Amino acid sequence: MRNALVVGIVGLSLLAGCSEEYYAEQRAAAAAARTAQLNEFADKCVLDYGIKRGTPEMSLCKQRLDVEATRQRQANAKALADAFGGLADAMSTTSTTCNTSGYGSGYGYNSTTTCY
Image (cartoon, rainbow, N blue to C red; front, side, top):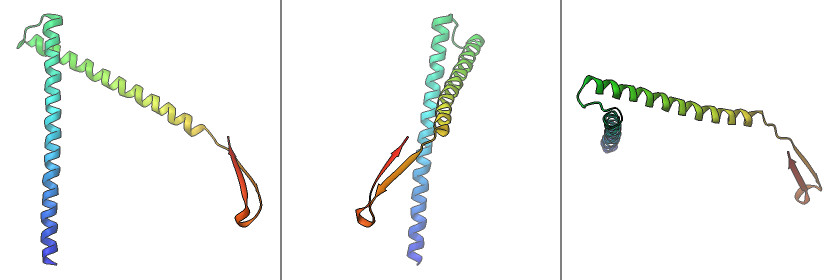
């Protein structure tokens, strides 16, 4: 009994470590993606608008581009949800009627089912 308890505790500890490592990797990937996005915004501000790096104008430009990107993501998510919502509505209002007819009895019973 004692050995089983020790094995269980060690197993849970290992699982917790794996789980924490996975989430740490996910957080690192999200931070890297965010940094890359902000660098793209900075490049756009420099190339498209001629704003110098490290200025208050650069901060405002990046913030504006971030707000626009967030609004666009929200609009895309809403459009997708609306499209699938419409599909779900169409599917839920569709009814199916089935008719079964047959003859015979026991193992010799033959039937046909038609749905529309």
